[in-house]
Amino acid sequence: MKLRWLFFVIFISSLVAYFNYTNHRFQVTTPVETKQIYTYTVILLPLDSRPPCRQFVIDAGKIANIKVLVPPADILDYYTQSGDTKALRLWLTENIKQADAAIISIDQLIHGGLLASREARSKETDEIEALDFLEKLHTDNLKIPIYAFNILPRIYPPASIDNYKDQKALIKYSRLIDELATFENPLDLDELNQIQKKIKPEIIDKYTSLYKKNTLLNEKLSALAKRGILSKLIIAQDDGQDFGIPNMEKRQIQRYLNQENISSNQVIITRGADEVALTLLSDINNKQVAYQPKIYVEYCDAVAPKTIMPYMPCSVATTVKEKIALVNGQLVTDPAAADFILYVYIGNEKNLSQRIQSTKRIESFLKQNYKVALIDLSKHFLAEETLFPILLNHDIPLNQLIAYAGWNTTSNAVGTAITQASLFTEKLRTPLSLANALLLYKNNLTFLNNRYVEDYYYLKEVIDLVDVNLKKSGFTNVNDLDLDHNYKWANDMLQTGLTKRTRLLKYSKAYNQPVPIHTTDGDLLLKINDIQIEASYPWPRTFEIHLESTLSLGEIDD
Image 1 (tube, rainbow, N blue to C red):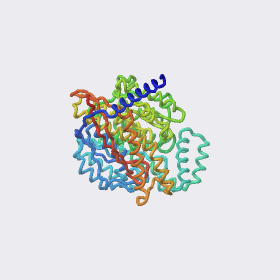
Image 2: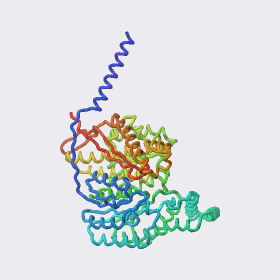
Image 3: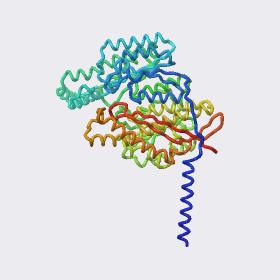
Image 4: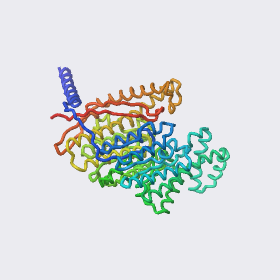
């Protein structure tokens, strides 16, 4: 009798739990419709045609009602094919008058993209023409501020130096020169002499000339900023390391800035590359509306801020401070005084148990109605070292986060999350009508969900499945796909893999928890009823994807 009663209690409890869960997931909602509006326009010449450099800026602009104009695809770069620099300059000239501000990649303007700039095949006359063009563009459009950015050559040799032994020796050569300049160790000098004997002089000259040319170019660009031709210049370090010639170039440029009394308001040296235009967008927006976001930063543990992540020349804390400064942000020590909390999770093989504590911490912030932006990084680029799956399994309301980023380098992720959070919280400073609030949240949730799908599901899971399948079938180079034989297959694997994972995500309790919204027309609970994605490879390689998410939103009925 007791056993039957126990089974009955368990059955009723399970039924109630199931009813509550399904009722929560399938709550009756009224469909939400929005119409995009723009109040400001920025013209963008992107670093290259990849989505992080182009599409991210367009999508983030929508959060702040900023229309981002970009050149047509047929004159931009495409993988190893350079952009048409003459056509791009003509496009800028013809379209800048539509804009309130301009963001210009110097690498695209002179070389036709980032990959082309690494080869630096342009002539000195090309640089002179580009500098003259910038001056004329400013003179003809005095009321339109021009923000420019240039990327320092990374330590890795250009693709045209394709001998593996030469590449390996040049990286060692680069490190030794910087270490010798820093420590003046005679043993380093001996090793440097031995390395130099293994590399042909013309190879060394080709490698070092990239940095010499770029240093001179950055000095000339800095002079334009000093004269007010450029409203701001960002000089960014791509794929940095603790030692190498790029660090020496960075120090030399800083000395030049000091000698010429060029302030950090005019020229800033930072880390990163792909996210720089995105960060500039936030800087432009914040200055336009006099917004200085107050940011409270919390790390998952005491080790995280001191950690030097892959492809970074500095600690995580240094990167965070730089990116906050780039958006004119202000660090605060009290979360209650912050416009948003930046939670920085740095996962590795030693702190896996820390994920539960971090999850509880984020849950606590959300329950207190704090705005939380999450940096979710793995030192080894592994899913099991990230926080996202733990948040999902513990039913943390994912769509209540205001930003999420975990892609590529620390500078990429931190710059992206801070930009999204800054654009979003700036709009919350003034009371919003129902229509404006729904538009803001839809745009922000779309950007947020793109990051979940790409930064976690693609970069931590699906990319490995695609690469393994391609290699099993004999396609060894996933960074140069054969468009005739395996590009469509790779796209099919990509779409299928992400669709399956997105389906699991949208039926999870963590995903289905509503987002509370305050408006001048009253408060409401917003819910994502459905998410549909379209994914493809923008270039014939698996390193990055083009992703479009379409959200169907609903207001939960009382």
